[in-house]
Image 1 (cartoon, helix red, strand yellow):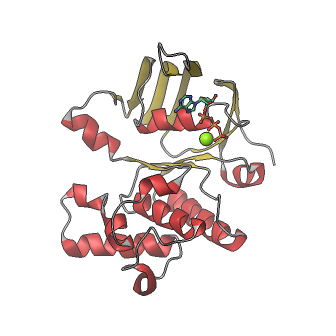
Image 2 (image 1 turned 45 degrees about the vertical axis):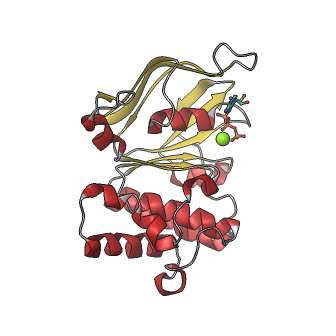
Length: 231
Ligand code: ATP
Ligand code: MG
């Protein structure tokens, strides 16, 4: 089982004056159980790359498969597979939309035919994961939060779907050092105990070298290095 890019090119604004190729004929396979760190300078294509893995955008050329299925189609099978891939966006405010934090986090699990009790259990577990006290925060509005709190809610919303592949695009921005350590230690625990595959985009090489089992370096829309991170 894996997420695979097969000679994928992604171009923004095809045919417009702003046309820009952000990923060039890239092939890579991320296997189940890996912890992949992704680094690269600003504009090197990291967010474009992970949005392709998640199926948020589709290749201009080439194919992305999750567990062997092309995710650019809109079949029922693809919808089921896309729910296995959870992504925390670089800008978490794009991910919040419900009027309370509990409802926001419950949004994903609602797709899986769970009972109300099971959904509440998922919300509690996810809030604990990110260090948000349920009784204090469940009924608050997600739009009246600090950047770090918004980040926590966005991560919790993804954790609540129990993703098989967890993609995090700069997840520690806005978090204080203690919160960051706590959340990363939970992510590592799930990686080990539940064997979830983690794909972490970060400018922080220290985080990546502490946790990742594989490092991808992007430069100008190409993977220029694929190997083990050094300490
Ligand atoms: P950062 O470290 O700043 O988050 P990144 O590595 O995530 O950068 P991307 O956001 O993937 O970089 O952008 C890659 C290239 O694609 C950049 O040159 C950027 O200008 C361009 N790009 C990104 N989003 C768009 C868009 N919506 N429309 C046009 N071009 C875009
Ligand atoms: Mg980015």
